Length: 352
Image 1: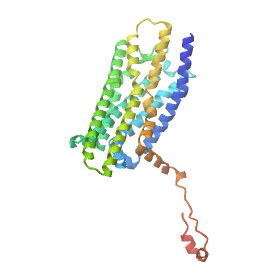
Image 2 (image 1 turned 120 degrees about the vertical axis):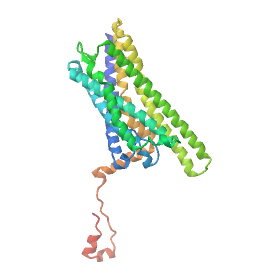
Image 3 (image 1 turned 90 degrees about the vertical axis):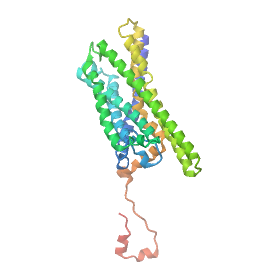
Image 4 (image 1 turned 135 degrees about the vertical axis):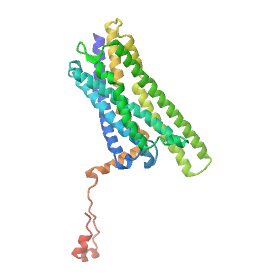
């Protein structure tokens, strides 16, 4: 009983403080990303519609990556709203999914598909950076706005269809929301591990490694041309790869405990457990589920910290607010010439 009370208190404190921080930064960051990448200047590039391509010029900031990141910002916003608000509500109330089958199905389905779309769009962004850095003109054709705009609806439809089993088999049994058919539970475990913990991280690693190789090859060619502009390009490429590594590190932290937890839960589903084992298992499962919100919650901060271009464009957003565009009145020095100005001249010198 003492162990149960201790773990419950730890869990509640994690949700109340740490997850509240993730929720605040995630919602604020997603909204700012949507505003930033919806601007005309960035909307015409492929990367802004999916994620965000890293470079020091505005034109390269907005390619396939802009398309990816705009879509990923919407999906991150949905996952945080549908995933964390019920978790906060649970602190002082009964979880609605424990007595409402509709809420159980919809909350689990929308949260999972939104998170899955964010992950897939990150993979597409990694591929975009690889294609853009490639010397092959054929590969560079895939890093275009038109391709990105076709990919986003395909990704959304695929994620909704592949996870359709959740909305069918999620159910409330003994006042608990979950999947209770063993065959479906095994399928869901295999599907989750294969996509979240194997396929997506592997593709991210492969595309990132190939991007690193391409950047190294470009640096060798540029070093033969000794000039200040070439040196700036080399520094820019290093910043590109650093920003990529920050995003991937955040993703791996977010999903690192997910696969081991699913494997353990599936294997021990019908095994006899002591009360302490059950309590520890439930705590680890709840903690692993909370970790998956780290990536959508802190992705905006990762961009802001690691990309100077992103910080500059974010700072420029202040011009969109009315209080920044306050009309200023020019004050002329008091001279004899000013005294002799007629009424029309004085009117013409006013700033409106």
